[in-house]
Amino acid sequence: MARGQQKIQAREKAQKLAEAKAGGKSQFSARAAGLKAVCQVCKNPCANYKTLVQHMGAKHPNAPVPSEESLAL
Image 1 (cartoon, rainbow, N blue to C red):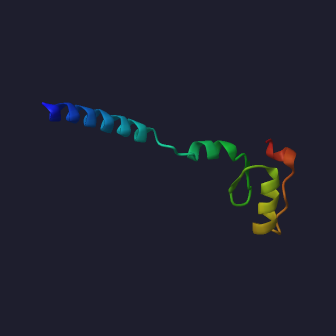
Image 2 (tube, rainbow, N blue to C red):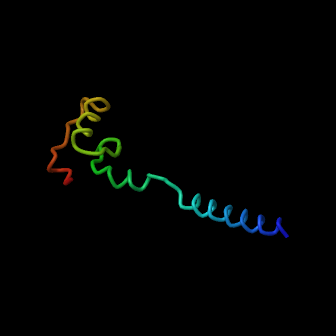
Image 3 (tube, helix red, strand yellow):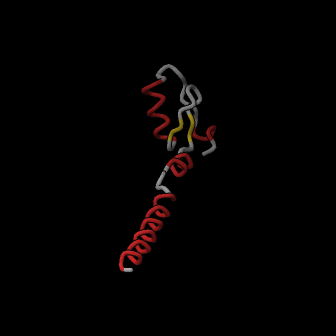
């Protein structure tokens, strides 16, 4: 019955591996929580006011940049 014990151990090892993979390591929710400023023109999320100003200068040069207080970060 040596093979029977190996089967049990292999099954337990496979089950532990499956449980470890099931959790996942996605960072989508953490990234979404970190994006606080939103462009009023195209609704693009930005991490902070500084990146929003850079975005507005590059993508919407003719649009006025909103003040930092109006964003309520």
